[in-house]
Image (cartoon, rainbow, N blue to C red; front, side, top):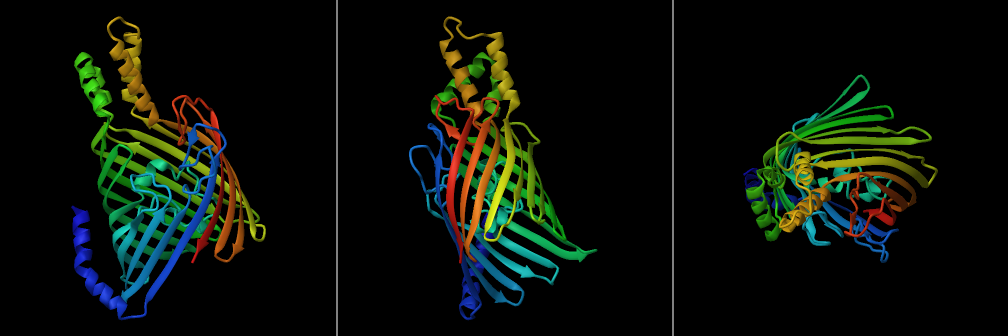
Length: 415
């Protein structure tokens, strides 16, 4: 409902706002772009569209344009359109997306209100995650900036921000609420409402940030017709498999997101670290995820080498796993006449395991600032897989690799 009110609000105001902006000279146009090349070291594995067959360019390639316009005293508008080579949701490659479209009003020097479409402020680099030039890495560490959160990258809603300074500490407080609806793979996801806030404290070389978000989420996993009909037949035979069916959906389930970030801009080494925790506080489609990274970089003139260590886990509905595993123990495979039941249980386990992630990573890279607005980056990243998962790497059914490596070359530009 909020989304429709927000869009209606802009449709009414847009002619007035654009006329006001066109009559002034207060347009500010900026942009950013990245061109990436990547290749996996091992065959049968894929990440962000990168594989072992050849160097590919879509994974980290992006183009964004941003428009800022002063509409009146204290009132401004921001619009940002981004075209990505690789999307985690169902958006086509390089299809332009409206990531930002909001009005911003400054009540005074301390308070600001925004309404419209905005980036979801999960982490330190959430608002600039597509602007590769803004950070030292080829891409923000995926152990925290994980692919499962990409679906929630922006929301339609409002926020209020308060800035103040006390005892040599800059305090930045943001509260927000809104709505989002996206789809990816065979998932339909709707969040209403999303409510949360974050606070940042900055002093001397230190920055500390804590964020808390609650999402009331509807998730619909669209299984194949064959799997769904087989599941109903299995439930009629064994009612405990209702937990497997429940694991495919979430009805107004509340998810809690907590994040903590630290940035120490020291000399000669700077440190950045973030950690996050996602908890499903209700039943159904349960994704309890945790991740962290610790990054160190050392500016040496135009060169900046960096090293990152991180880890990420995602546990998908342990009750559903227990149902299938208990069934396999109490009713072992190979019983005459139950071949279809055996095949379904293995298929169900495979579907559940696809949503389980357990990985740790090492990242080694080098950034070279070619110009004041151009950076070149070379990065090597190793993924180690645990608990029979493949982490955030997609692999074919025959692959049993315990690790993977990705090499990435990127040029980042802001203009």
